Image (cartoon, rainbow, N blue to C red; front, side):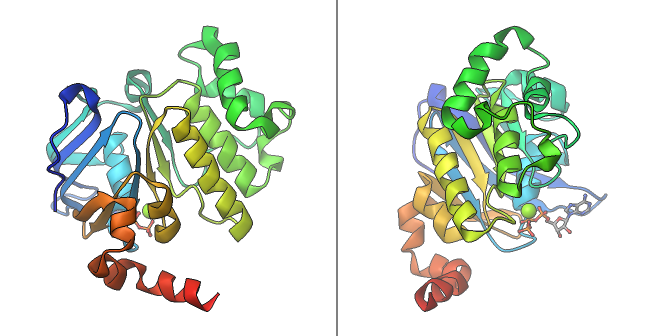
Length: 253
Ligand SMILES: Nc1ncnc2c1ncn2[C@@H]1O[C@H](COP(=O)(O)OP(=O)(O)OP(=O)(O)O)[C@@H](O)[C@H]1O
Ligand SMILES: [Mg+2]
């Protein structure tokens, strides 16, 4: 199912249309994926393991070969651009793992995020520590000495330093304890409430759909369902296919 809601072109930040992409010759992982993110939206992407969720984010960040289809950012094609160009155009990407420089301090990690625009450091630092206040007092601490949840915060802050048009997050809650997972979702919400258009891939489908404006269910490299997060949460087909186990876990808790 594709999103057919008419949208004024100026409101569209990211538009992905009929994207086919893959790593190996002749093997496509994305098989006609579509996605639209409008200004200020929080978009959630869920789906089974191996569905191509990470690949979809990587396609937006130039890390997998896009064979056909289009990806635009603020109306301009970003297909084929290298990471540094994508960052300067306004794409912020937080991969699931290895997303901080462990031997550098928090402050140095944030500076690395802003190497293209060092003059606005103070202003951007104020923005990110406004959301992640606990990092502000610990800027000299080595990122490698932080907990998983704290590293995730540093990684998000680093991507936010460039004031991106869109922030791409690959499983911000992965590997965290339940309490920390909750915190991660609250932080993603806070980032979005601060005005950042955000696209988040998540394993914790239920929680993701609860906080996102719109969600996409990705299956075998294609968007199988799309709609407001709450609608997907209550859609019997989505529940049966993708939320069933999680629902059972929650009921049992
Ligand atoms: N670098 C790569 N080279 C070849 N194949 C890859 C590569 N990365 C991913 N794949 C394949 O692409 C498919 C989709 O992987 P992807 O990581 O996008 O799935 P996912 O939906 O993010 O899964 P998960 O929920 O487990 O994170 C998988 O079959 C995977 O083996
Ligand atoms: Mg993944």
